[in-house]
Image (cartoon, rainbow, N blue to C red; front, side):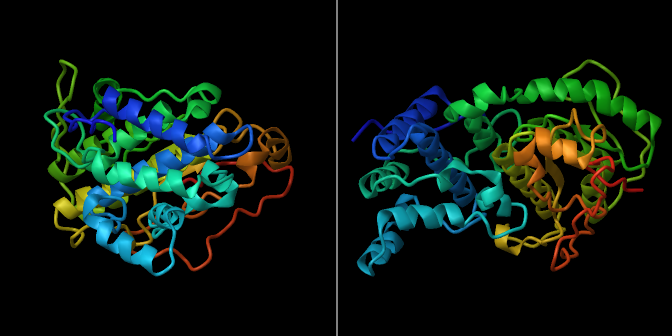
Length: 366
């Protein structure tokens, strides 16, 4: 048994945690056949981390911590396997439309490419139960852990293909805050009491969007916005609105585009949880906060696509250049922003564009 990873104190993942997860990837990849074994192992380790983060915050039932061992033992006694238990932990995330894409075949999540051995799955599960730190912890500065900042950073830290092939490099929270001070505050001065619209064309796992949502929530619910990092004047004079209306404005005004499907799926999950958490803290959503209990209409517009091509090429050309992205139907983007807490329609509407018509990634919302 290796030395337990020290408790986390900052919102960013610690070096000991990253090293420990990379060791888990090494162990899992040994038993996975094929030349993409490490990519597949990294997918399993990352998805387990995402499930543990959600479980530590009560968003889904826990399966991988020490307190979950009795349930795991019973599952094994009834004929289940360690790999099946690990798979269930990952599948627990897909209980809300925001997280369905994590297991959608079109998103090419590497966990669908192969499976670790039973022994490796058992070792990974034991590591989370015995040695891994709590992913729900207080931080002195920066975003709360419920925003998923740590799993957002871990995607680039443990999945080499995304960091290298897609140049995935997440910005620190203080840099995001400084840039938003210089952009969001001037916009709030110019467009008082309106729904502010912003888009991150390369949103990654959502760091900029998460900080923008936090600032917009402050602006909409208090009528003022103070700078987070820059020495500059804030904004006052807005008419405060209810938490429900603030959430509606955020869903109607915040957009993100990401080329990598799994990265976009993580962003969509994080943004949904962040908005739900703000609503819950303000008394607009009952607690405890559970993914399965969130309104289905709480679905942000985070799309998989190439923002450099959107609206500039035909659907046919886009499918030729970006076939992986063209196969994906981006839930929540083919209709106006959902009214919280109204549910989505039973069947999501798909854009029916002629082959040569320009391809918009978003419908304009008044």
